[in-house]
Length: 60
Image 1 (spheres, rainbow, N blue to C red):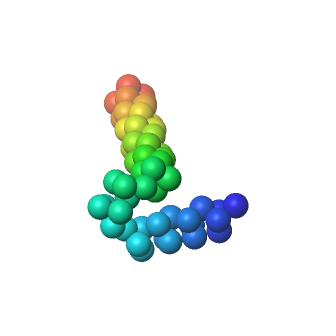
Image 2: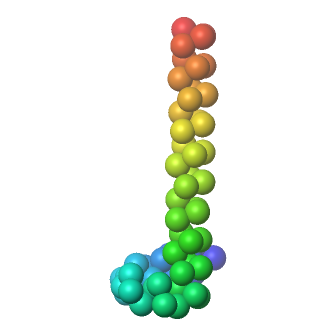
């Protein structure tokens, strides 16, 4: 599965053309999926970082 995701992202980012993406709903959906996934990962990272910071601050 990881190989499929990796090849999908590499193929998509290699041929990145914003004008073509705006015209094609399928490619626009792929961009939305990538951006949404990135937002989730950033949010999870911030939450985990905040919890670690609170833990270190309180228990040290």
